[in-house]
Length: 142
Image (cartoon, rainbow, N blue to C red; front, side, top):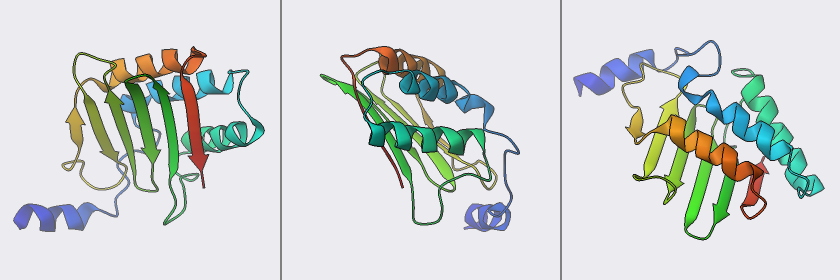
């Protein structure tokens, strides 16, 4: 209870004045996705919105009750990212020796981080997948 009370007290404090450094690799994922020639107009628009949110952090995050979603998949390999107004989530399945599950809150103390696996390696593999035409790219922003 004491831990929760302490966390609630610092929740309104922005932890990062700029995009979190441990998530820097996600910018390269977005740039690689935008470089794809096979993107439809709706996917390109959503990916641009996603990119603008990251570049304009913290002021360009999705609004309340909204989130952005990006998924790359091919066979049994999948990378999924959710961007909420208050946090970033990364899930990588079957692409690495271990599953990656990360959640980085933008507000509070950071004690509620969920960090399972190596996010830097997962983001680099996700960037490579963004460039590979055999990976389906799905995105929603809004």
